Image (cartoon, rainbow, N blue to C red; front, top):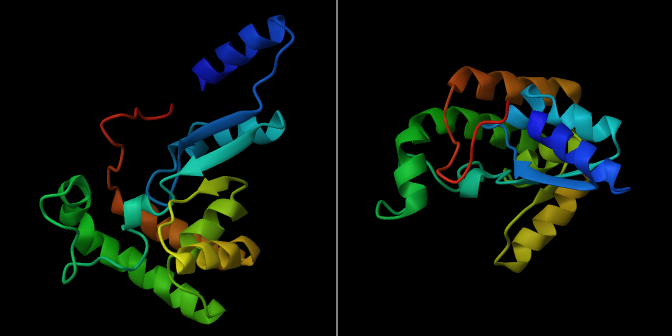
Length: 168
């Protein structure tokens, strides 16, 4: 947070302004929220682009202990050990998705939008684009958001990748 404020002060002295911030933000990594970055962005009219909202597919509902990531992949190395815990969250996401008649992967995207961010999502198939469009118009209830956040917060999983640092 201090780095963003420092950069903002430097730019402001030159008549410039930060207009966009991009950071890892998901149900499993809410450090941009807990550090105050999201609030700072809202207060200063800065767009926040969230990436890894689906945690590279781990929150898509596609992977579980019976259907893990390829073991020899970076995603497998990071997420496969977490799959027993992630199954609990993915079950919650599916339950919420079923009440809205959408795919489970749309729920974390809709959550990120509800939190005031613009999710960056990787798509390789037409249905993924269509799902993203549906997620953009999906309105989650406060109870659904609280339920997901409580469950994910209880997990205490570390999804900070080697190229990132914890936001403080």
